[in-house]
Length: 342
Image: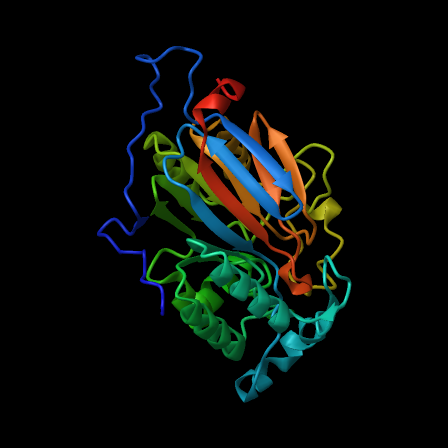
């Protein structure tokens, strides 16, 4: 039996699952030591558990990034000069646990089957699901998602909209191929920034697939922080953390032309000489200063990791092309464990 859809669109373009609970960042009427947004987080390979007082209902999420599907058909023939390298990049992979041969289609289907098996509330698709914007691959993913009956959130990665060697700025190419190919995946929501209310937690999908954040996205994030709701941030490119490679490139002070080693290989414009915009740097600061942010989930680097800045955990998933995913569980904290976070 197909699962009923938990998503219901509203005039504010938010999607809701279950009952939303209002929270306030003003704790003046509470004991100063209490903070409902403090979390206890555990990670065991691909299993992630978040505990907090702000979590009122259990939520199970299967988090996917970097599948790099390369399926194509005759409609892609006119674009083969732009897709040829990435069409061969992930034809065969090794499973991240078993090390047996697999491939992106098989890995994606197995992950969706797992999501159904565990009765996931939500699937998050956080970029580079496609190696290039192939109509055949996008249609296949939409069909597979529909068959699960599970709600999903999608944001683009840097490969999803990139035909290598095609002329244009990163921003203009992203806008073009979102409009021409990727738009159905957004379910009527803003492709660059959208909020989804799920059992009292607000999930923010913000597209940083150019490595940068624009002013509208920053204003959107500030509005969400001001809402006082418990927030979870979904971005494709990880936020900068000290000691990490430049691929942790959103807000990275070392990001720019000097560290761009792949622009010729990927046949795209070189990163700017001036590095990040001030808006992007401000976004990085505001993310880790947000009092009601529970955590950040991301992809891009094809390797599982966790970084903690100002008590805010950022968790990166292995690439789904090799079978990687995260099973994320948000769980109300037991009374006996509240002492751990108060």
